Image (cartoon, rainbow, N blue to C red; front, top):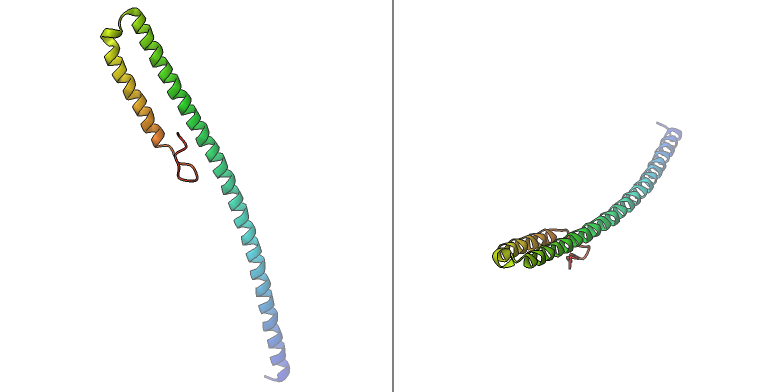
Length: 120
């Protein structure tokens, strides 16, 4: 192998190295772009999920309030009918169980970003 062939071989290797460096740089740019896209999508999904969780919490609170109001209405109606003395203890005990069950469900709801229960 003469000096000319060695120079050509060296030049070819340098060219291949440059191409590989360029390919690597392009690959990194594409990867960075894709990572940014995924992060943005995850951020949007997180915001959407947090909104839905807050909406569910609000709906649960509204349901709890409605159930408590209905329980109070039934108790008042029974009192007006004179049945409170006979049935009050049974209905009161069942209503208390329902309220406790609602609290258990609320405690199982996901926490906010800080790990704090926003149910309160």
